[in-house]
Image (cartoon, rainbow, N blue to C red; front, side, top):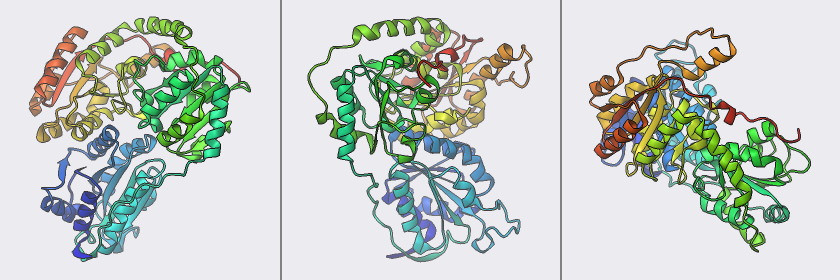
Length: 539
C-alpha cells in the first residue's frame, strides 16, 4: 500500500498492465490524470488527438494490430459520446480497450444539476457497447478497478471495458494498492466434445473450415488441421491472413460460396458464421462443428452437431492428434475451377484490382493494410493478398464510414516496425482528416491513400440503380487533398494511375513520414454481387 492520488494509482496500474501509450484529449474533468501522466512520461506516452473519435479509433487500431489491450481517456458527456462509435466498433470486433472517462463531481452524478458535460446515467449508456463499465469512487479502489477491467476485457471473448472517475476524485489522496495483472480466464477444454468433433471430421468426405477473428492467434493450428483433413479454409475480412491467402487450401469468400453446397462437415473456428448459415443455407446433409470462446455465439442460429467452448489455438492443438493422419487425396484439381472463376470475376473489376495490385507490390508482406468503407476496401476483402494475421484490418459488422485513418495511426504506433497503409474514400477520410495534425505532431508515419470520386460512391450507385437516378445527399465538395496534407506538414502526392500509385507509395514508405496520396477516380464496377451471394442449399 502506498499513499497516492486516484490519478497516480490509475497511471501506475496502466503501466503495471503493460500500457505504453494512452490516447486522448485533455479537459478539466481529467486534469489530475493528465498531470499524473506527465509525471510518468518517462514510462508511458501520451498521444493527444484533435477529436475524441480519433483517440478511440487510434486505440482500436493499436489493439487490432498488436493483439494487446490499449487505453484512451476523454472527458464525460460529449467527449464520451464522440468516442462511442469507436467503442461500438471495438465491441463488434472483440478488441480489448480500456476507455477512461471523466465525470462531474461525485455527489452531483445523476442529479440533473446541469454541470459541465453532465449526462444522465453515463455508465448505463456505456454498458450498451462495452463488456464492463464501473466507477472509481476513491483512491483505494483505483488499482483494483483497473485490474478488474483488464481482466474482464481479456477473459473469454475480448471486448472493450470502461471506467469513469469524478472530477473531485481524481486528485484525492489515499492508501492505494497496485495489483499485478491477472491471467485471463479461459474455459477448460472439453475433451469429450473435442473427441466427438474429431470423430465427425474424420468421417467427412468434403470437409470445409471457416475462420473468423476469433482464430486470429491460431494460424498454425488452423493450417495443421486443414492439411490433415485436406480441408479448404474460407476467410473473409477479419479472418484473412490467419493462414496466408497464398496457401493452397485458402479460399476467398466467393470461392467458399461455390464449395459450400458440396461440403458435408464445416469446422467453424472463431466466427459468427452469419452469412454462411443465414444466407448460403443449411440442410440435413451438412454437419457443423463450432469452436468459439463465447458460448452465446455457438448456438445463435442452429445448434451445431458439436460445440466446443474454448480458445481456438489450444482447442485445435488438442483436437489435432485425434484426427486420422493417413494422407488424403489432394483437392487442388477440385478447387482449380473455382479459383479460375474467381480470377475471371476479379478481372471484371479491373480498376479496383489494378490499384490493389499496385498497393500490394509496394507494401512489404509484413505491412499492415487498413481498409475503409470504400470501393477498394470492398474489393480488398475478397482479393487483396494477405500473408499473416493482423495484417488486414477491417471494421467488422459495424462497417462504419470514417474509422480507417485513426485506426491506421494507432496501428502504426503499436507496430512502428511495420509499414501501415490505409485505403480510404474521400467521404470517409474527412471524418478524421484533422488527425493529420496528430500524425505530424507525433511523427506517426502511416500513409493514407485517398480515393476521390467526389461522392459517397456506394450511396450514389444505389440511387442510380435502384431509385431511378434520383440523386440526393451523395455528391461531395472536397479540398485539394495534396495541399491539405502539406498544410499540416505531411507529405503529399497525386497519383492518377495504378503505376503512379505504386511509385508514390514506395516513396512514401521509404520516407517514413506522415503521408497522403490523392488518387482521383471515376465510378468503379460493382463488387457487391461477389459479396451478397444467393442461397445454395437447404433452408
